[in-house]
Length: 103
View 1 (cartoon, rainbow, N blue to C red):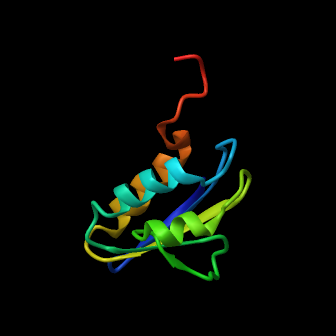
View 2: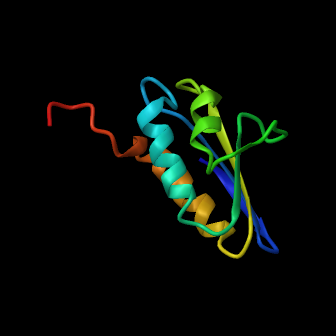
């Protein structure tokens, strides 16, 4: 993970997708559901310079098509921005809580 920053209700963070098939349907749903639990405006991009999409929009996130090895950049603005970015980066780090074993 690259270190995120936070200033005056704004936060950023980035992490590389390790999930085998990237940001496909199930991870997209998990990401947007988690994003919606925060009051802050949360955006997602493949570059620190954007373009940015609404991380709370399942249609936009699924259309994003981030592949394995892509770096997801998060930015959030609002009272819980720092918590939101940390939670989303952690979800990606945990491989979207999907087990690839025989469980």
